[in-house]
Length: 220
Length: 220
Image (tube, rainbow over all chains, first blue to last red; front, side, top):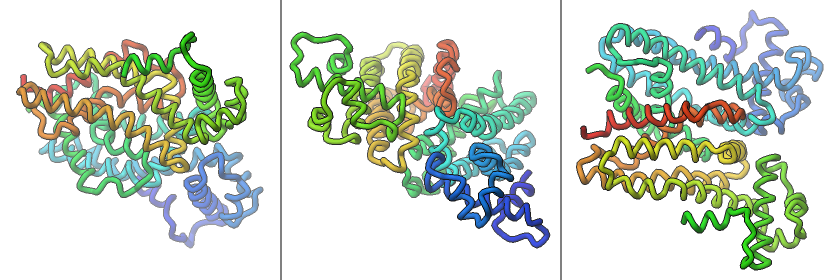
């Protein structure tokens, strides 16, 4: 998934890329830029076509409607972010120093999830959750929902090996992720200042989240 | 503060209430209803005047502009919610069974914070944080920000008495509140279904939050 999403989000021209794929990529890039600037409702398919340098017909042919196009952007952004921690999560059950590896994962996760474009997209989607419930559900299922399931499966393995004390691996995974993310993420929902937290701040929250988690779920 | 906010948000007519106070209250109630239905941008001062049964001039005379009016609604809603747990927080340092009293407080907090009108207002404000940063900052400062400070002061007292092991009371207070709230709150940001969590679900999250918190910050 990592290589695949890297390919799809790459800004570099691929000489082997067909004309249709090239147009599709231009549309997705233009749409993401406009959505982040102007919100979902404030962006029109006309503008997206203009910025992408294609006809409006091409946009509709590729993506059917604005909701479909935005869903594609959500899915791409989240897969891209997920790809950045996937290997770390996979490796957790075989860790020979669980506290250290959980800290490394937590520090990576907080940095990935708090990337400005993801924080901004999150705000837009929350603001539109009433009018466009499917967009919001897609974000939740593909993002936090899937992240929690993946981590829960690894925590269950760690439980079987006696490395964690987990009765309910999904609850443990959710607790872990929110312990690491909640303080800065909730602050950033209400404040668009991207420099609000330094890397040191974020690492401190990540480390403290892991400490609290292991105090409750560790086996020594 | 409890009695004061109860008075201000009361729906019951107060015979001693002056004409101006009555109009002000009608405007605030109409505005809150419209904002929750149509969002901040979708609501006009004209409509608010119409629903409140007052002239547009009266609305402007009382609240100057839409941002001021919305700010007043935010402040009222949050003070009202805060009032519901204020006594419980105050009593924590003298608790003779800290685990039990933290659970009672956590269960109360999750129920208060997840009231449908507050969840909906939170979504609206997050969605408008880019365009109306002052509204969003007001919400954060008056809501979670103040909540964390109050709780941190009590946790510091508990630390001095040897009942909690807290180096950084603010970090401990933030960790406590997000441990209790994060799972359902983050889910509800992306799903408008108010029946998503039963009272039993919420109490389970609250209890688990307290367990995890005390594993890390308890002194036995």
